[in-house]
Length: 286
DNA sequence: GCGCAGGGGGTCG
DNA sequence: CGACCCCCTGCG
Image (cartoon, rainbow, N blue to C red; front, side, top):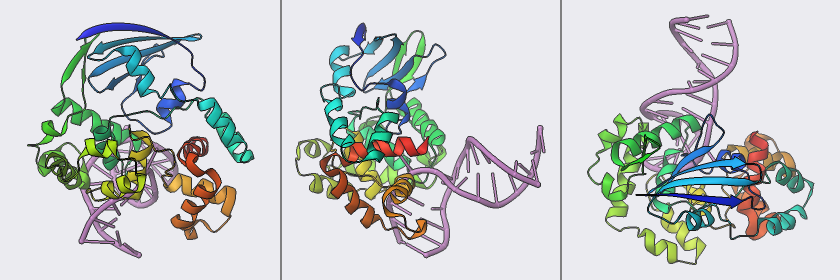
């Protein structure tokens, strides 16, 4: 395990707080010195902003600069995407101004899949705790600054974990879903590597939907927040339902149909719907 | 302070 | 369309 350091000059549209609190990830913790520490694949990473630069330290098996560019989506021109979205209307301008530092992370597909199954009908503090326990129990330890961190367990590392074991970790009724999906991945009923190569978003979505615990909302989150990176999907949860209705539909809240919102999002935001969703979600929730 | 509803980034049957 | 596990929050 190699120690590395990398100084990153502040990229456009890049704020750690926005990135880590907009709801796409669950494993980054803020330290008392204002830096953030997280686990990305088999690397522990600490990022500290110092004026216009970021001091990044890591322990792990990947080249830190490459990892940072790939993980934080730094090769994509968010300034251009924001300009494009801003032209749509005032709502977009306002929400982008609020969340202008958001970058959509390229997170490991397997980890994103499991994390968002856990997120169903759950709250963020509890989701974070469950993922932490899961990693501490079945992941690999990595030492960083005398402290222990744990990788997210691979499918193989969960192969002998029973439904009851998951229940004991505090997963609640999601225990069975986690078990079944893990087994399906291990048996290659769904091949995640093949999924990464498939350019057809609808096909990928349909395949994800066959997995236990994966419904429309979870499938779209996986498509948007993992390495699949499909900007055209539009995950609909209670918050986005609310904000879209308030801004565009003005119907009685309990009568708004998801299909209508989906259609509206696609018409308005096109192939940038997912990014628009993040700005709207982050703005409305805070 | 303690105790108890209320509800949470949905999915499944 | 109701149930679902756990737990954190807010109120009395």
